[in-house]
Length: 372
Image (cartoon, rainbow, N blue to C red; front, side, top):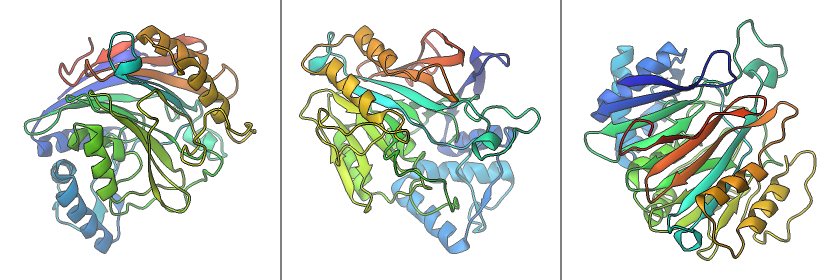
């Protein structure tokens, strides 16, 4: 295992570490758990019946995660078949975000490379402040210590992900086959604080992207995997933009009634912000934003107008992200901007350091495992 500091410092808003782990999935799980323990994670109690069903689901549908949980048990000195503690969800800060994303297919790209561009928007506050209290002495903002994690398993797909919350989760991810996944809040007007955060059977909202980049190579495979999977969230439903190296792309989201939706856009650019696309399919017929919608409709209109009927270069995509970046006031910021190149299998990210300061783009690839 190798951990390096790749951006920022303790004097900046974000300090970013890149972690590379190679070997068998059990070894990868043990190493991730050791780092999570160092960061303050502890296993969460789980109902024994639910926990047995969770392990069985992972073993059947996501064997990589099941093996990593065996590695977590090794790190904790526990029996991997014990039923009282969940050995996943290696969280060190809460999750959730606004965000904007744009998929540019190869057919609309200046160089024939399919790309996703996304802004990750989140609060600059501590956990205590977001929960309505005062920050504890020395408490850092909850999004100030993101990790870039590259896993290179002996058997399976190598991947690189960015996470601000769970070392076994993912906000942005790409694998060696060129499948890229990014998450966004799906229904900002309906989001609510969680009432019950106990582990359930299936995929949590931040595990879902990791599941896809570890088990799928194409968008079609990802659709089938999602339709067969159990999923759950904790009061903040998310939706997911998925794209592959062959030009396939879709948004996966669930309706307010629990229905599942694959949203596509006829092979053209696909814009995503923080409202349900299946309820608002026409980008030019969106409602007006309110104080509760964080500009989701205006941001999507701006991305659509920039991408409609034109050919976009990588620079054009970056300019589009800058145009919908969160303004520099209040406790909300674009904390990183990522461009996924599905042809090159790269993830290029600029991280927020402080007022009007971002890093240069850092380029990561599961093929290389280190910044380019």
